[in-house]
Amino acid sequence: MDFHAFHGCYDLEQRTGNHFCVDVCIETALGEVAESDDVTKAVNYLTCYEVVREQMGITQHTIERVAQNIIRALKARFEAIARVECRVTKLAPPLGGKVARVSVTLCEEY
Image 1 (cartoon, helix red, strand yellow):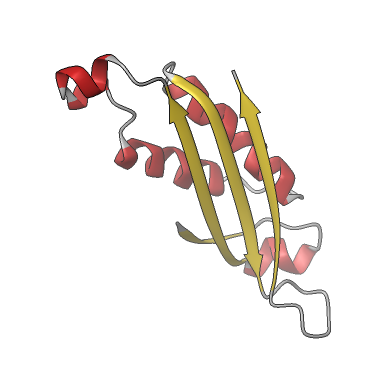
Image 2 (spheres, one colour):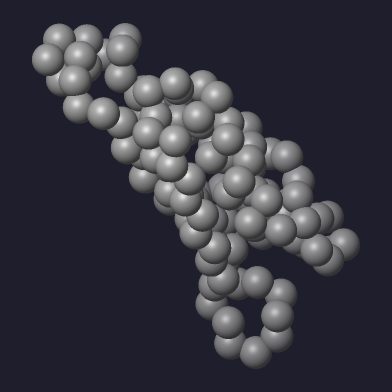
């Protein structure tokens, strides 16, 4: 998922924003959803996107905090989640030199 957001520890980052990519991997137990083919019982990927988009709109100083907030919000929305891995990548961070991106990956199991 790609976003323009305002995360960062520098004032300029929080004023002008930056380009971020978010990758989320969600694990749930195989069971009723697969057996019943009932989409209402599934972890809906559109809803997941909306949860991530909402969290990306809340300015934070670190991408670690952003990833943690995404993980917690997804788990709060979907009880069936057993494990969430979230990678937040900031493209072209203001570090000087030729740094194309910085990423952090956090994982939580329930």
